[in-house]
Each structure stands twice: as C-alpha cells, then as structure tokens.
Image (cartoon, rainbow, N blue to C red; front, side, top):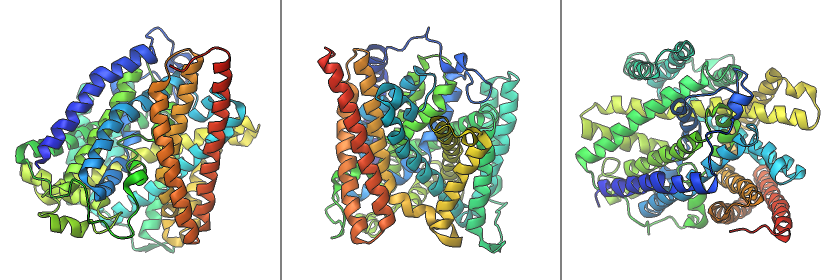
Length: 558
C-alpha cells in the first residue's frame, strides 16, 4: 500500500474533526464566550499571566505538549502493525485529544487559570486535590528527568545538533524583546526560521562536544546538569521573554519539518513495507490491548496536555474563544506529527523490504527515535533531493528542540505545583519561586543521579510507568471536566465516553505492569505503580460521589 493513502485518509479525518467536531464541542458543549474576561487580563502580572496572540500561544502550547513523545510512541507502537497505530492516532486526535485539550484549557480559564490539581478541589472536593497533584507531580518528574537524559544522549551522539539547539535559545530571546516592542509577528517569524535553519546548516560544520570526563563526571552527566541549570533559569523568566518566542519558533520549525516530510510523501509516494497487522511478534511480546493505548499517548490523547493547558496556556489566553484554536488545533498538530512518524518508520525509506523491517522491529521497543530519523531523513532526501546527512541533522535538531521546550514548560509547571503545595500546607518557603524551582530541579537530578549513579541515566528507570500514569491522568482530567459540565447542566457524554475508555485501558495496563515489576523484583516501580493505581481509584470514587449527589438533586447526565 502506498503511504500517500494513509496520509490523505488521516489528514482528511483531522480536517473534518477541526471544522465539524471541534466547532460543535466549542459552541454547544463548552459554549465559549468572547465576552468572558480571561485570567490573562484579570490577573495580568507581566510574567505568568500575559494576554497573548492566539497564534503565538498555539506555538507555545503545541511545542510544549509535543516534545519527543509523539515521535517515540508511534515509532514503537508500529511494532503491532501500522493499521492499529494509524486508527488510534487519527480517531484519538479527533474524539479524545482535541476534546481533552480544549476542555482542560476551558475549565482552567473559567477558574482563574488554576492547574488541574487545584481545579479538582473546586469541582470535586478538597481531598481530590492532594491525590490529583500526586499523579501530576509524578508525570512531570518523569517527563523532565527523562527528557533531560534524552537530550543529553542526543548531544553526545549528534554533536552537530548542539550548536543549533542553543542558537535557537538566543534567537528566541531576541525575538521576545522585539515582539515586546511591538515589532510585527510575521517578519519576526520568517527571520527566526531562516536563522534557525542557517544554524542547523552551520551545525554540520561546528560540532560541539564536552570532554569525555569533566569534574569526575561523564559528558552525558555534565550535559544533564547544564540542561537543568538552563531549565531552572528559563522557568523563572517572564513567559514573553523566552518561553513564548522559543515555543513559537519551534512550532514554526515543526511546520517546516512537517511540510518537508509530508511533501516528500506526495513527491515520492513510497510504499509501506511494515505489515498492516504484525503476526510475527516475539513470543514474550505484550498484548496490543491495552498496551497500544498507553504506548501511543501524545498523538492520540495525553494527560500531560492537561497540565500544560491548565498550567501555562490558560494564563496566556487572550479570549475564551481562542480555546478552540489553541487546544483542538494543538492536538491536531501533534496528531499530524504522530501520523507522519508512522509513515516514516513503516515505509521503504526505513526498510526496503518486509524482511528488513522485521529485522529492525524484532521486539517491542525497537525502532523509536532512531527509526524516525533514519526513515524520515531518507524520505526527505528521496523527495526533495537534500543530502541525507543534512536531513538527519534537521530531524535530530527537531527532536532535541521539542524535548527542550517540553522541559522548559515542565520545570515551570513543577514550580507551580510545589508553590501550590506551599499554599495548601501553609509552607511559606515553598511559595518562593526560586526555592520551588530549586526543589523541582533537585528532584529531577536526584532521580537521574540518585537512581542511575554518576552516569545520570536514572531518569529512565521510571519511564516504563509514564504511559499508564500519563493516560490515567488524561482520564482524571476528563473526569474533572465531566463533573464541571454536569454541575452546569450540560451534556457530559462527550467527555465521559473517552474518559471511560482511556481509564479502563490505562488501569488495565498499569495492573499488567505491576505484575511485571513484581516478578522482576523492581520494587521501586511496584511502589510507584501501586500509588498511581490507588490514587486513581480514590479520585474516581470521590467524583462518583459528587455525580451521585447531583443526580439525586435532579441533574441529568445527557
């Protein structure tokens, strides 16, 4: 089968979702109101609460939620075949992720920009807030610790990506200052993209590496420390200074990357060599159900999106009606990245024959980012005639920048959570932004080095839990939105149905993993997995009690 058919069917489905389904949800369910005063205006402090152009905010939201996950997840899940991966990405984007992201952004905007953890107290109950925030903190800890390791590994393996990755930060700082002085957005965008890709080209001639050993630590470990020092500083800067322009430029960079990849598909029309349904899986391979639905999180539906939507994006929303553009279109953007990833790792540009493809995907977990870069670079080279090495650098930089922007937002969001804990438990020291940031960065470094030793690889130990924990968080976010809709007397089935499906799959996957960790005597993961499962059950029970009370009072779930 030609890859162009997969692309056309997927894109057409998402376009219909944007023009039809998202409009229905926005107008009939959430009833977005232009006259509503958003927190960005009501609480404008010039730092975290800042009214922002919806296109710029989309760039921030999109790149913050995208990260490397919509590449890693689909590139791994193709192991079960490209058909189930494509169906989950496309249908998940339309009916799950778009509604989830819009809902989290809308709900937070309606509650003065509160995070989903704080919002759960207002909507469900006080006890729920502490439980909810445990799951949120664990997800952020996983994302930040692991992405720090991912970027460090990329810097060591691809020194050509180092210069453009740091050059992008300098470009963002300059653009932030110019936009603050009311320079036009479009020229700044064009200039920023040109400079960014010029730095990618220059990076091919300016490889940057750290000494193999410095201060008694390996180069990867030193990169991890440098990255978290940067993330700590970035998280304390006003959003307009670095976060917004950096995310926007990266968003535009992603659009260019997607145009290169999708354009190459239309030009070269490569065949698919991966099986539609893989019948040659390894004997010890886990079942596609429920593991598919937690392996592909970002790109279908992801709880991390709700953290970003309610943590930073809601504080920058200029008009409530921008929720649809930022939230749903952000999910669509990520879905398109996941879709082209599936094509890149499934086609002849990655493996010339089904036999070669099976050699690469010999077991679950094979392929991943390396397969995306290899297949994507060959796809771009075949379609546009660019050198494979240059195309590989483009894609490697794209992965690094996405992981970096997610880290930027993730550390900032961890700071918010810690400051909220300071409010809850009346711990004044945790309310301080610098202290909260140091605690956030410290916990990530503690995980990376405390669990992994001097190599700094400990962040990867907790990563197997990310899929199920992230999806449980997505279902809990949909639950909060559903209860909020019920209280307002609006139909809740459009959030309750995806919530139920995601929760069942994620909980089932968590139980399977719990057994695996126990048999492997990995008691750290057993403990963390058990905490997440127990907390999710308690939150569900609290929510059901609230819903039951409203039903008894005459409210109806329609």
